[in-house]
Length: 422
Ligand code: RNT
Ligand code: ZN
Image (cartoon, rainbow, N blue to C red):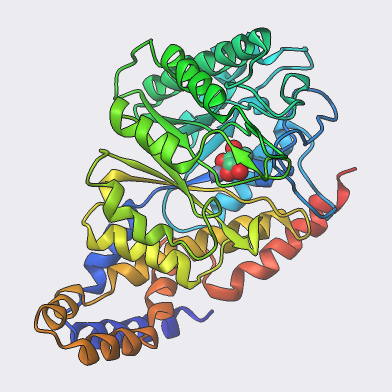
């Protein structure tokens, strides 16, 4: 896009927002502080690098599609993430799963992972001046095949997953220490049952016991933030998920952990945006898994829709940007995966920018005065204000492609790099 036109449009937008008392410069400064953690698993459909062909399965995670060009090696992944980051304004973090270690062809089972398997990632992050986040991988493994991991009645399996998860905390804390920015280690387990169980209670008691063991070791907050993620149902856990919303929210409040809200993990008419001001009354910080569910927890590419707008608005309205860690979580194997990241991250940024450009004070005054017509009218009017012009200016001043200009760049990358991968 023509540089002068972008600036001209921005100056006009700036004036338009100013008439509502909204400062676009201040909004952009705040937006630049919103670090989005890119989930590494969109590059390869949650495969990981443990074995040449790790199989996705066992526990409610399903990527569909067979678009060519997926990352098959750690070098591919790094190359892809570099490309993605070069197309995004602002600074992002990288979110790794334990199966993405640098195992160098060695068979390392999950209960054996160590910092050394992630040191090259830490070095990568140092070079990129960014932070890393982390996750235990309690799925895609024979010990997860019966549907239970940390809540398993099989003591051997449960111990195995406890050991794995303990190690992820140690690794994440080391990432945080070396990188000077705390690493969020998020625990999600697929545990649940396909058909109606009778002993929900025992599994929940076991999950609680496992978490207590896992969290027994303390790490400095400056290095590690522990998060736990609930879910409503998954493939193969339709009738009961052990780690339900109530289970983890209770645990997080009682034990001072971060609660992870994945907006694909609730009943379709529930809004994660509505939950933010509730949970922030009781926990210090949140982790968001920003996704797009289509009819179910389908993990479609994030777009700029009502759902993520409300999430961003509520965070901004609560003045809680500093208490919310933002991560993406989706995996669509049916389209260019680099494109999937750029669309999703830009959509999330747009949502935050939209929220930051809201004349919240005016809306609040209307609300307090019972002027509900005026409140709704102003919300509607703001929808057609030149948000895009402000975002384009952010891209321009960040030296990344503006608006549709990123499309040909990705097409070229597909031609030069992705299409050549076998
Ligand atoms: C699954 C959870 C979980 C995973 C990642 C890969 O339903 O959302 O966060 O998507 O751990
Ligand atoms: Zn998630």
